[in-house]
Image (tube, rainbow, N blue to C red; front, side):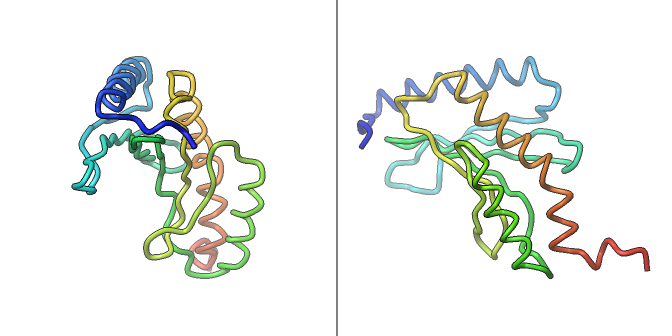
Length: 159
């Protein structure tokens, strides 16, 4: 189990994330917004960021970063629950999970599809933040249109 971060350790990691995100926004043309707040957990009020990026396949990709006392959790909303071909879509997601490193597809609220992962606090650095955001962004760009064509197939017919 990883070390439990105290308030000073979490604050130091939050500063690292703030600095890296500021540099990322300044050097990247895909970033449209970055904001920081806290999670809904009133006991700890974990630092939380969202990074909104412009995509090609999907217009907007928003990644949520939540810094806990042991891990940095990250997630992005991929698409709503499929209206049809759910078994085929879920099979594709499970097969894609096998190839992903540091992230996995999951089903969230209202059966929506998410891409999530977490990283131990002690491994958190600029290179890992770059890998996390790059992985989530590239994966969503790669899978969004093909998944929509499976989960909402009747909307893509030429009738």
